[in-house]
Length: 224
Image (cartoon, rainbow, N blue to C red):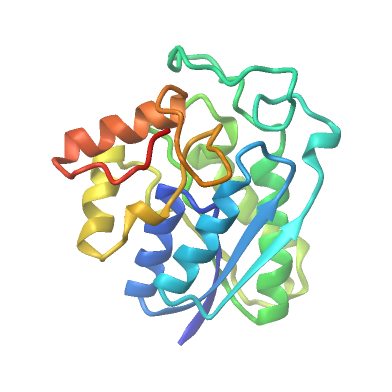
């Protein structure tokens, strides 16, 4: 089996990506991050999902993005927005350079593993305001990765897979349900409590709830 590194947050999207990578025949090495986020319950969710979906290995890397703050997810002085995402604006939940940092870690592990494939659950439909979720960003990072690594320079071409990038939340849920993803194990809420119970009002909760409704799938999310 070909090896792949899967960026696994513990949320709905990344769980679906892991299921897709397994379906496509990859041996999956999952990478999660304790980066100073307020919703640390997602890390327990990531461990559950990795086990349930047959990951070969799951690691959690610790980085301190809270040292810089600048996001409602890493700075306690910035409230998590609950009024919805305005089109054309970058939400306060954007974490500066997060995907660049996480993809760089994944790139390093992939090179050590001898893996040429990295999977990430970015989506340009629901979160088009996030600059590091756009196709042109992924394309640029992939090019950089092939220029910056020994594996790339020696001809082992790196590919970053983004199977969800053009899907709606409902389409993601339908696809994952067909692959047996148990969304009750996932945590999407930006201010979930330690038990993983969702607030029901943040942007992530709104998108998730609307997605289940549009997909015609019962929402398994535990709300507090």
